[in-house]
Image (cartoon, rainbow, N blue to C red; front, side, top):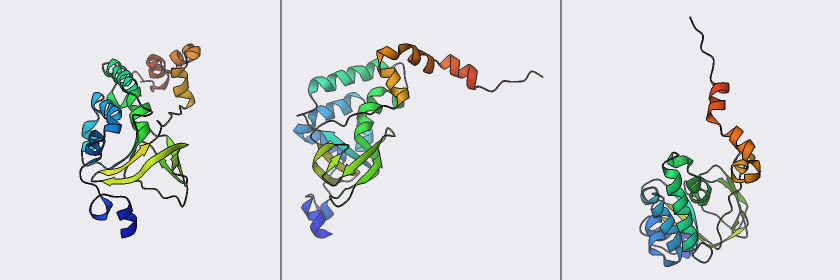
Length: 192
C-alpha cells in the first residue's frame, strides 16, 4: 500500500496538503472551474470538512466564456429557485461531484452516484462515462480529486428533457405546473 500511495504523490500516505478547493484554486489549468465554483457560491462546500470526490475538467475543454455563461445562468435563476434546484448546480457542478471518497483502480469497473443522482460508470481504462481521467486518485484532507480531459455530459431523464427541449413546451408547462399538482395531489379536506 505504501508503494500505491507514494505513486500518487502528496505527503504521508499520499495525502496532499489542503482541501480539494485549495487544490483547484491553486491549479492554473483549473481556473475556469474555480471561477464557476466561486460564481455559484459553492466554495464553502469544497473547502469544508464534508468529503467529496470531484472530477474537474481542465481549461482545455472548459473555457472562461463557458464558465461566465453558467455563472450568469446561475444568477438569473438564483432569485426564482432554491439553490439545490438551480440547473447550473444540478446539471454541471453536481454532475462533476460525488459524496464521499471514491478512488479507482484499472483492475475493475465501478459505479457511483453523482451528487445530482445520476449514475457514473468508471471503467478500467480510467474513463468515467466515456471521458478520460488524466490525473486520478489525488487525495486531499476532504476528498479525492480527478482531472478530466472533457466535461461530463449531463444525461437528463425524460422529465428533465421536456424542460430543455422547446418542441415540448406544452408538455413542460403541464408537468411543471405547480397549481395542477397542488390540486391533484393534495388530499381533500373534509368539512365538518
